[in-house]
Length: 336
Image 1 (cartoon, rainbow, N blue to C red):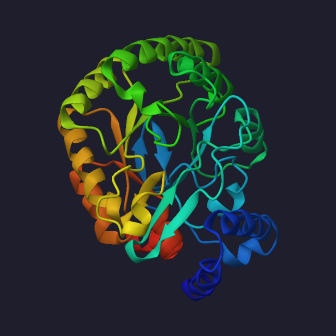
Image 2 (cartoon, one colour):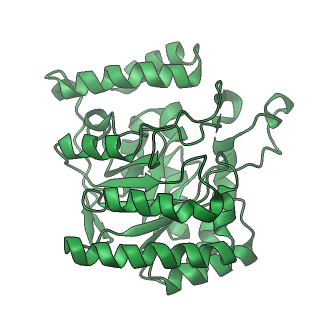
Image 3 (cartoon, one colour):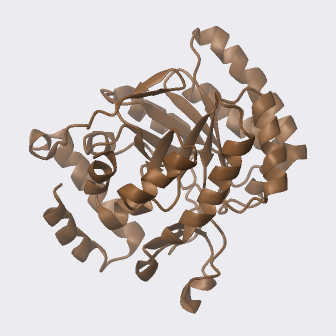
């Protein structure tokens, strides 16, 4: 999809409800890219090879979780220049998520507020989708808990999804930082996190023996975490031999938004998240073991904003909202 086509698409798309447009346009794009016509639009992946988690990435720019929750659009997304894709967030059982409307564009700020709540078709569906796909780039699987699962039992949902995805995923992300599932962020507290990681790592080590392969484990953290609790969390990440950290999820801080958006429930992504996520990224780099991979995400909408993430210590970066506002050419601009 070249820039002129994207601008035309965007002009029409922005007239409609954000979630409806997403759910209509992506199946069409997937159909095109899966067919013979996909070869016309295919973008050669720009080679900026890097090795992280012992995985070779053709380039360090990936797609963040949330865009393709169920691994339904892999033909399209793997052919527009990304070096890797992260699907999800996926839960043990399918669930509808929070009531609609739940996705709102904040166009003046080049931002999005989402209150989706882990709507997905369940881990089994997505894993089958990945298995059917002729994989040409690494695919990460982002996992979480069902809304009805009590926070004290959350580890059971993550364990279930870990078992299901271990042999198929290139890496697995523990999403403990979405603001749209009640009490989920409580898992980031040291008391909860220690018992949670203890349970997860026992299973992770057992699966490594069963499958005779190491599937890297990544933790996705919130941008709203203070430096003290963050440092405590990172000490645990260091001691439990976690492979990577994603900095960061969406923010609940809507202080600088126009008053009509301030009371909308959900996580804010895009430009207003940029500085906040960079502060967390900088603190993570200071306290994290050097051999742990850092993935920077939040507010990347240009080559310079991506470059800043790398300067602050990110080994890989991910896009989501920037892709919505700037289109696939953003990937090429960053890599060039």
